[in-house]
Length: 313
Image: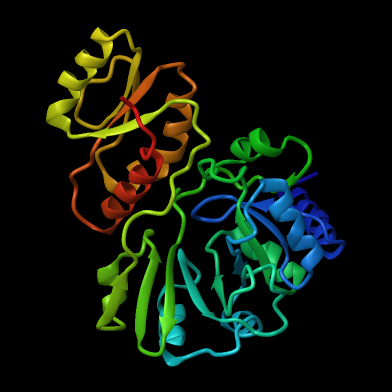
């Protein structure tokens, strides 16, 4: 079977599963998603069950284009049109008033729904072949780090979920999430599209305060440390009998993982690197705090703050 035929066969099988109320894991440019028919509440419920996801955490509707997006929202303001034309397909989720046809389970009973058009050929082929929005969230157990390759998904769900293997995600960090309210924007989650990018379209852009609760699926406590303090902190911890791993950029790494110094490369490697160092069996992981400037570094620091919420002393 040729690659094209194998690809088509996988997509057909995935579409059939979605139509029958099943779940499919699929790649996007950000992370792998766990998807279901957005208009089928019993199918959507399977996502929450599979992930162990709290019912008060809404999902995102993945669409092929603006026309499909307008099927899941009750209002499509001019600002949403401008943003979609500029950033879709891509890593931007727009939060807008939900259409009544969207089941309440998707939005956790709330009045708004997140919608985005992913920029990955396999995701787009899946959604277009299915012919409707595919609701989803990251394809991992709840509160674990998001998966950036098919192997990560299989580690969470084994053979219970069909996985469309599209290789490693080229961006590796979840989408920027913005609530659109008239001509103003509220950034609910930082992503690869930065605040300054959004200010080109609206002068009223606000950022939700602080990171959300961290991913607690790691066995090893993690601690963010400035580069000039890592060595002294490491020595103090080792003197107290702890095995210390380091996730560093400029810092010499003997036990742990060196990270790229370029923002995009760091973001792509981040979640895989966190999984790797967590598996080393250390007592504590010290993460060198990045100091680079720009939207991607801001997002990297946001994600690192989330995973280092636990006490690592």
